[in-house]
Length: 503
Image 1 (cartoon, rainbow, N blue to C red):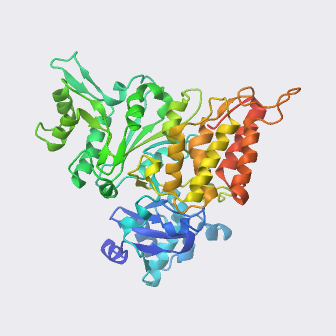
Image 2: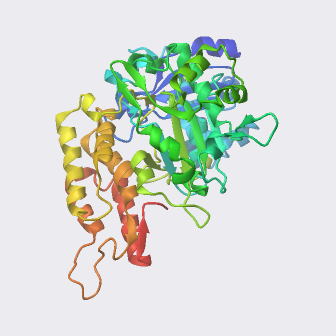
Image 3: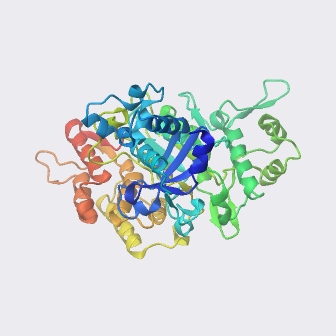
């Protein structure tokens, strides 16, 4: 089969499989086939593939389909479990194909597509346009905050997850390695050097140029720095990854971003954000450093705004490792971010034993949200009540401690709940606890009120939270990430006298 024949068969919007393991075809190019989990499955169970993206080299499908046609293999030979049960060699090795064996972790998806190609079935076409599949009611499954912290041990795919967000031809992903000597915002945003003659604007990270590229994408959709909400879904998200973010003190070099992030607003009149990179007398030096023309309409808009604001389509992702070479996070940072843990290691990606228990983290959010105030969003009354009750209980249990939450966390927890509209209640609570609450909790036995011999205290804060959450999660408790993480934190406190969320 030639690529042209393959492309003609693969219609955008075709759904492969059904139920919770269905994938819809998002795009086809000579390099990559991109599929994404369908939203219908997510509403049935928390273990579905909603939003999980599969980017598989087109050449794999062409090579394997050729092997099927020539009789070397059958479609079921693609399945790793089928091969393992029969003592067969890894598929690519048997066929002498020079493809990354990691991609066989997508064997069930590849098998579905090859079955479709081999049988001549028409496949199921999505009932909704592809652009609408993951944005129910305009807000469902959209990222509630454009600042993520990806936690986990080294090598779990945090940076790779960001790289997978790339859209061909858009240049919408940038990885910036953080240096341990960064201590002020100019290390990231650049500065005007007076030493050289003439003076010039210097940026070693490329972050300001990436801001301009993100705004250029916004400008192509709506030529204004104040686009309206309805224009946001048409903008390509731009992802910047601060790799090893906490090698330097985040509160210092990222201070300007943390401040401006909280001053973004969306209203009926459009998006509004103060400048992240401000300039006045040095405006022309900054323009030259960024390679912009003086009469560029986008540059003129920046000048009128007094600088370059945060683009509404920009998502900042920090990858985090905690060891003796890194810095911790203050609650100032944790309050402003969504923390997501990448901790599951699935050996089946390399032909080993499939992962049991809690599945690898699949973020349910894939789009951009045009909301910063939870009060402006319609919310399911019972879910909102459950989230507020959870937060009130947290503050009651942790009364008179620094772990209590305030308005920002309440607002963002409700934004999370609204973004997961259609998710079952326990699943929503699991995401709220894991992204906004547990990352705040750390300390020694005294700080966490752990019981000691001869003391009157019988339960630590962790014990009291566990009792409260068990009743709220119900039958979903044992299968939740919250349960597993809380047990990890309790065991660490018992054995070392100190605990935290971070591995």
